[in-house]
Image (cartoon, rainbow, N blue to C red):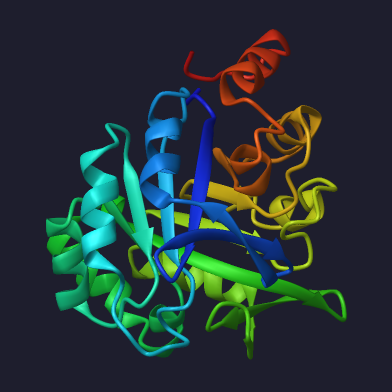
Length: 250
């Protein structure tokens, strides 16, 4: 059995780490370089860097900031936000990213998933999926959670995997920043997918991580504010999980 991964997330706006609730009311959480250094020392398994306003502002990802972060971490770095084509992926990988996360661009042009997988391998492609529940279905949202599509999570997640996604990062917009636990039903609904799934949205305590790993098949759990604000220490979290027979890297 693969070890479960604990993944801090740097949501970036105007070159600063930010965090809000339900994708709105963003508040400053510090300098991305300093946060990256902290997580590099903290037993984090990976680090995710999401330029959350790049697509909305129709600009490229902050390549220089990505390069600075990459120089300060020695754990896998996933970068997303503003990716439109394979050229953007090339630049991010040359800036130090190990994997790229694509969201809005993949919905607009699903063949981009196949292009990246063909050139760099499926392990490089993380399809990021932001969802809200309406009428007992999870619908996919783009542009930083601002635009609803009529595509359901069930349909899109399967299509993304079929096109070559090596991993899915699924975020519950309803749970984002609420610190009341991951959406267990959401992650149980994608249990039959054949690629690793990262749960995102709702982490507020040590027990929330245990619950999502114990009750679903997700291989990773991503969180932001509880780590940024030192409400949960990653080393302590991993010991807590290990003591409860959840396999983690110590």
